[in-house]
Length: 262
Ligand SMILES: O=C(NCc1ccccc1)Nc1ccc2c(c1)[B-](O)(O)OC2
Ligand SMILES: [Zn+2]
Image 1 (cartoon, rainbow, N blue to C red):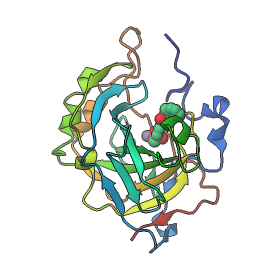
Image 2: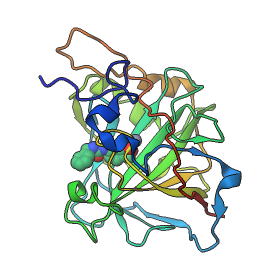
Image 3: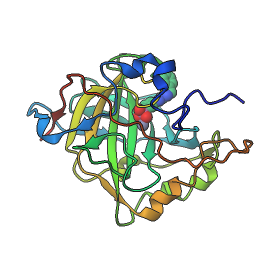
Image 4: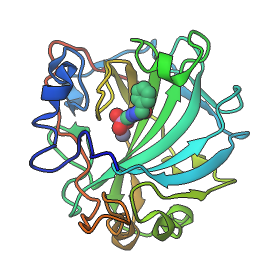
């Protein structure tokens, strides 16, 4: 049973990741604090276009850091394009980051405001690269759509995910998860901020064009609470560590420009 290389605890969390992953102190790290009035409005930034109608979800899994839904990505059946992107990028997976309480949990912040959670829809540039792994190390390899989650009313579709979380409680557990289209998790408006950044978890590769959607989706406290019944640890481990606060805090902007769609 391999120990965990990194985590979100005192001994293995974001403040010590740089020891094994020196790029943690690099020039284009994520997440960041987005300051709307300092973002430059770029009229040449077109709308984000999602072609998810043929997307094929395969499974939902607990990877010891988050809960991930994986998609079939052997062809261009589900892609994101437009906006800052020069090519279509293939949907590979989505996952969430959340807090132990509603007052924090997102990775990106907006003028210092944290949201309760953040959804990441991960896509890779299959036009220029042969595999996700290759794309993940290239400066234009990945495009991640970030969606904020705020607590309020029940989200009418999130139950499709929260109802099955008990089947992936432990690290390493996987369950079939077919027929789910993540388009149902998007807010009505896709106005966004975009900037060049990185994975927010080790290996922290600086390969992500971030597209952070301005409007949050609303989910209930009860729905969000179900994410907190997941655990970071495997079933065979005696330690039961509740999966929460799996977010990296904002990183230095280091001169980067954040652009805003209209
Ligand atoms: O795919 C990941 N790891 C596996 C891996 C395999 C091969 C090469 C590199 C990485 N990680 C990862 C991917 C995308 C995002 C994040 C983490 B995120 O920052 O949390 O949100 C966006
Ligand atoms: Zn993420």
